Length: 144
Image (cartoon, rainbow, N blue to C red; front, side, top):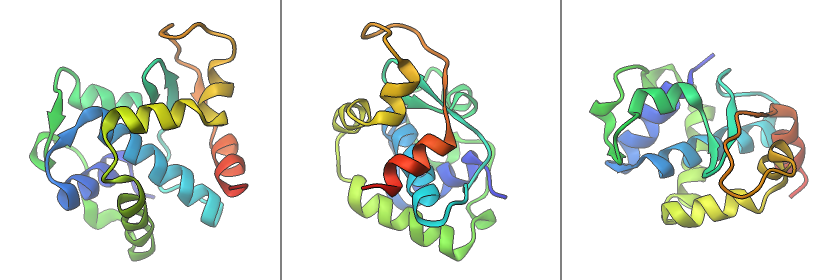
C-alpha cells in the first residue's frame, strides 16, 4: 500500500509548488474519492478535522513551518509506489480540484459531512484532532 507521502510526491510532481493547505486538501480528496470509487484506501494514514479543514498530521509534520512546498521539500515518499489506477484517480482529482484556490478547497471541505461530523459541535476555529473516518469519507463521497 502506498503512503500519503507517495500521493503528495505525485501531486507535487504534476502541479509543481503549491500551498500546504492545497496539498493537504488534494491528498484528502484523493483518498476520499478513491474510497468512494473502489472501497479501498490509497494509504493508511488518517486525516483529522482541524480548524482549517482535513489535515493528515504525518504530512503536516513533514511540511510544518512552510507556506508552500515543491516535490523536493517532501523528503519521504515515491510516486512510483502508486499503481496506474491510483495515479489515474489522482489525476481526476487534480483535474476537478487542482485549479481551485486553497481557501476555496478549505471552504468546500467545511461544507461536507465527514469534516463537519468529526468536529461535532466545536466552535469555528477550535482545535480538534478527531479522525475523519475512512468509512465516513467513502459513504459521503460515494453518495454524491
